Length: 339
Image (cartoon, rainbow, N blue to C red; front, top):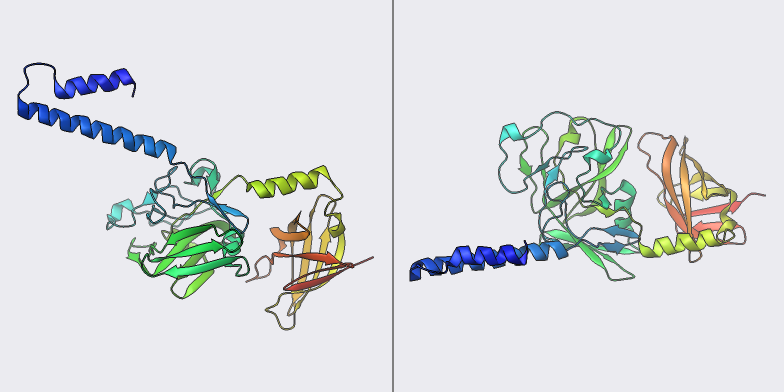
């Protein structure tokens, strides 16, 4: 609204002649309403979502509301979404049955066209939710008074709050577990099972849904499409000096998995472009997947990107560690370089 248009509305609201006192009072009320509206519009224009970096991932501080919009506050609910669908559903009011889509969502990926995240943001992957479960870098704490969970980066002190809004059931759109459990979609689907992130008083975990379960209404908390500035600087530094981090290139063999007894056997092959393949055998079961490798501050991070052979019930084993005397090791793996 231009200044001229604003002045015109004020004149129309108050009138210049022939108005009684009551009419002028009503006019002044209109002026006040216009001012409040404009102030609110200005606030919304400037309240841009910049995100918070938690363990290397830039998270939005608010849930997705209507497609393309964030909710007003971190504690605000936003909307429920079914997997690979862009229509949002209310988290508070009872559903009218003919508004709910009871059909089973389809697709082998969450298509970009169906992502309700605002511009510059996207639905997080399973691995990005896993980064919140790294207790050496992130603290998760349930808040009973706010009915949700706060995740805090142990190095920077930055935090995000996820409200526990429950979910809507796929068949009748019934609202369940509000205030006691949070259910958030990831974009990852493997072998027909879409992964989600769930939490409550009992803790946090990754889960998965398939078939009609894809029709559940869960919340979306987006992550930034643009990597954090620190990560971009590291990548730029590595590109400027190709030798930086080159010690990882080659073939490595050893064991992995602190939760396995005995540990699984693994072979990691890293190419010159910092991509590679991770092959493993665990309890008689073998598999393999493609990986990408990132190097910063003396630490190598290996992250699964695409399955080659995926055994049932197996997920990517993402790990990080340092190299010393031809040994690449971390808290839950140890690999020796092969000549």
